[in-house]
Image (cartoon, rainbow, N blue to C red; front, top):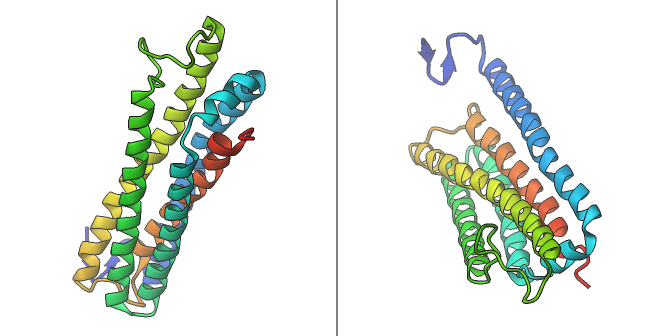
Length: 217
């Protein structure tokens, strides 16, 4: 495909190219909203149907780790936003530094989530043949608790997968940023990855209260 600098042949101007890329990212994110929305709906319906068991299962999740991860992710949104700003004003070194900071924070989030998953494994809260919620719990209680943890691992696991994709995108952005690719005239990749990263952060802002905070008292 013909390319002149950062302008691809099918576009007349960089502005048109940027608008098209941004529209494509928003369309993609709208499909992600539908995707996660189905999971949120499934969780909400089942929590309403099995409120007591879901509340008890929710209390077994480490609130401290979840809170730390929430703070880490909010901080990563700030550094990502700062990297977009730095690329827009031509501060190439700051762009790289903020991208690296975002990468570190995202990696910390995934590391903490790994610790949390390990805790659930040790406690036999991973759905499957070895699942055990509470000693002496009825078959029905164990079944509903297993449903909770199935949704917990499904929702947080899918979110973590999006984080892994985001980390990969950040590595690519950092490599290109070190080369000095992003300027006030062309910073579309940084802006679009920023949109993706903020979306993933917003999903967690919904997951955190649903999984960790409701009925915690």
